Length: 281
Image 1 (cartoon, rainbow, N blue to C red):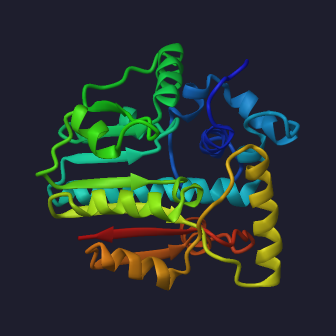
Image 2: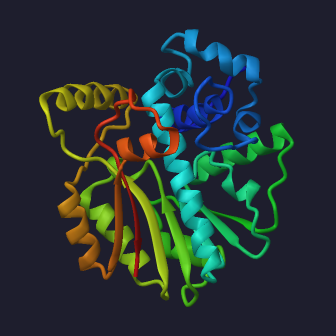
């Protein structure tokens, strides 16, 4: 099998979600489409722990702490969508969706899901869905945005997104790769949405200890070698200040390590750096 796609990190994330479904570990997050969209069987996924580093799924599937973080991140986000729907929100925007399958598993018949990504990435995803025999539901709207030539605002407007209605924005695995200016531009757009507006995202933090520094440098070097360098990190205090500046008043911040422990009861998994936030205005 050969998968061609625009992003090795997006593929690694997809493989991590898929391998979590068959791994011998506490199930944090269930996604029955994760393997299908990649076109891999359970046996092929199970074999990934012996795959070499050149395999596109090796980094996602073989590293247990990262895999559990990705599963915890997905669960945290989908729980937030569930809670938003319970309050009456009927629009969800997934920024940088990659091969995420929530929109195809969407259990809420009146929730419209907008997936925002680069046109090439979305064409790749559409091909994967077609090959896997996964039907995109009527509640899914693709919103291709080439940020070199257009804005998030124009892309979502063209897709029929309603700026006057409440929404939840899910922004996973993206912030660390953006410049501070790009982050602020996106936050300003989200903050101008009709209230209530929910936002779920993850971000990286500066290393707190020498051991964290070593681990984070190694991870940063791996993704930089793939042409996707980390550009921005925040302390929890700094990101809270930024969110309050944009009008978010309810800020719920969780270190990834704590979420992994909460969801799995595993005490031997160490994954410093990422935090997950749910904010509301």
